[in-house]
Length: 104
Image (cartoon, rainbow, N blue to C red; front, side):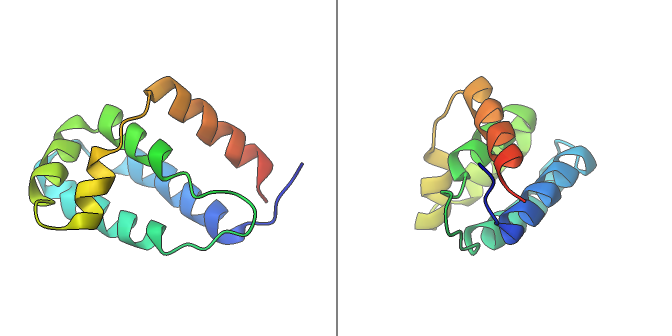
């Protein structure tokens, strides 16, 4: 079944490019934080926003950036919640792959 979710498709494409482009360094925290703020603004009609999957991938593929994001999130309830999400990396990549196949 295919779902029409152009905003989500664009955001997931941007996420893929972001994960390739950025290095796992402290100066990339702001880039990741800005992506996440924009990602959370996406409104979907038929699919839940894959926030847990995105966070699990960042945590596993960019651990230093994730750690610093977590440290800098103190006092920001949204980012404290996001960095507290715990999901298995393999399950996250599988779910995200399935979502990408379902949207157009």
